[in-house]
Image (cartoon, rainbow, N blue to C red; front, side, top):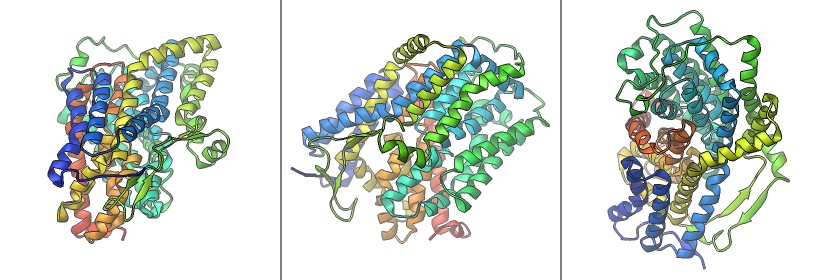
Length: 553
């Protein structure tokens, strides 16, 4: 028996919207309180989401439970799988002392913590976002920053803030492709429109990250380096997205940004070297930090030895991210499981879609093409090169599983909530509330993308969830559907720093378990402020000359 989603169970949009918000508000409140462990908060929020879906939104209990189970599995594959194997590689390099060499190598470029932050969290993180996405950049940059001596809150929180502007083109343009698939709009047009919004923030975010770390005075002291970093990323981001394609935007922009910053630092260094690794504000995570070790310049052989694991990772992930590789291996390395009594049993209905459309519920176990699988292969190859025996690798992997166990439970529960709210129509109810804002829709439609990423943990998922709604609503209001579809993705990137999965990834990478609420409270104000600024830009593009000239009709 098919079930049609219900978007207004109380026949009162305000009450229905409040009901739809209960699961996510409960989750964020429990995490922010720091009184409930994050994995327990995630499980409790999943239970609450099931109760809301069944008893308020009239979803049959069987469908609700099966949707949750599907979400749990998809939470581990691919997100948890990536996190597990990134941390595995990190631990291998730490055990062999290669991470300390890498730390000294970066310290050799500059001892200034602000400039290290630009190089690692922004430019290097953008490369990993473009190559793989899905939590990889925060895991890698968070681990590197903590290894360099940054405080846990600085390493986790600032990695999250820095991983914003590249997200719309992450994983070789996957969010743009997902947006195109549900709107029917050419991905090149969508990528170009996003490329007329985000470069402004690509220039702004490096200043923002350093300001959040070192304060206004500390930021002013290194403004030339920040400007070089931002411009060398923003200009290629615009050029590649508008004149080449949306797939390689992050790869090209991040490589140019890293090269430009390193080259600039050969001829310029700040007058005052900032050596504190703690945030300028009260930073409880820095209380018991050991003083930074003096930088020992590594030899050339040591440099190549320390870089080898990460070079292998880059090569493998770039290969894994291509359509040619995915298509070739997925023809034989795929197992698809259509969930019984769930696949095709739920219908999206108007006004979300023009006519009833069945929701698919198929778990595609593309085990070899997962980014996490590529990361595991890179870690094993690196492990053998580093001198590990097969037994030694197995032992380290077992320790990594124990280390990440609570994080994996949390991530799976988060994805279960996202899957359930999507299949139950709860997310659509929240989206419809934003669609009633009339002339202010460009602003609130942008925040809808932000909400979608905060709920699902993925710009791709947010685009798939709300992309068609953005298109329909913009056409009804006489706005450009390309503008508002792109705004969903551009606004969504600012929600990436507060989604619970990313916060768990950050706390895991920095070994700061149990402090997810502290991280959330630190990044939330940055997230909502930046999302509102994107909304203001989209409002200007919708109505105010000369910004309207930027809009693709």
